[in-house]
Image 1 (cartoon, one colour):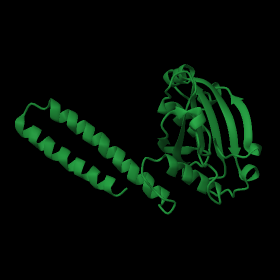
Image 2: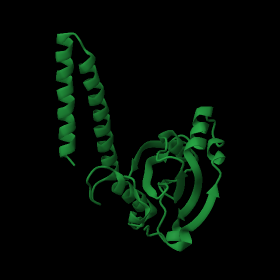
Image 3: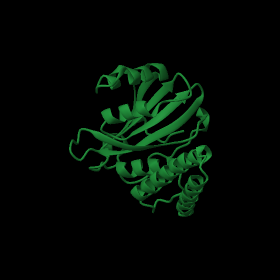
Image 4: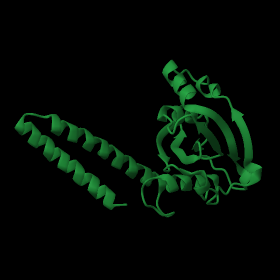
Length: 219
């Protein structure tokens, strides 16, 4: 269940081609749209008129897109393409049969060209049954509050309303980057034959693991 008023409901089907034709994409990305997506529904438009919540310079509207998938997967590149075309935050309701998950990007307007969006990172829920969906969307006094609180609910870090959303995003990005570095180092340690080099790599690996542990303790 999603607490969105009926006046925000649109239920408009959008052809997939609308997105990959808006900007120049290669045939590989176009193929992903065709192979992965069954259909895209512009489900809701959250604006001052439909929610009575104030817009801000950062967040004027929020769109809700329902995407039915052909498999239980969607490429990050597909979502990024959609997010770059639409100059507002988008909450994705991803559906595969009777399974559902939510996803949203942390993005902002390009400082040089305000008609373009810079997509930083994605946050998403686990797959659940459609009848289990219960998300409190319209939390806050403004549409920016709504956006921030959607990010709070999906970011994999324990947080409260008092926590600064940008600091949470940066903390999560640091954690994810460290996890990637650790994974690479672990692979290097396994491959390395020279003893001295293996010792050096292990020292670096333990250092990175300690950094990650300290970051996780800040949650």
